[in-house]
Image 1: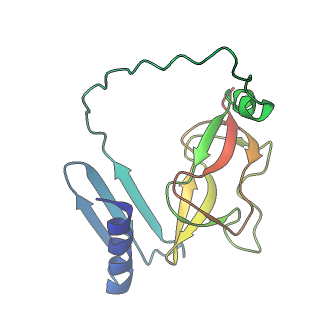
Image 2 (image 1 turned 60 degrees about the vertical axis):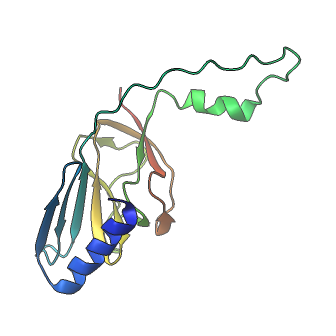
Length: 161
């Protein structure tokens, strides 16, 4: 099941007026809840890992010694390598606050625990709470409030120590 099929399913459920729909196949489990009393509507998508055959390593071609060294910009990811990147699980609009008159869920320097809500992503009129899968300290917020985000786009850098 690809993202377009999931989005189509979410639209169908939203239009149908159903409060909850669960779908399970061999490789995916989806629960869509709408019309909750808290005002937030949540969509959960859980991918069940599928065992894959090991891929044989491919030898990298040798580079000539006259090639220029890597630029400083290419070395920047090493500085952030000790941090965990929290990425967007869906396409939508990123919000740092639960509503315009409320404070942000997290700020730079906030200590977070596993399961803490970090932000909300609105997708097709559904507001999805994005929860942390790690504990640590927010080092950097990589997206501006009310900005569109893509699937797998980095949102936060977290220092797990």
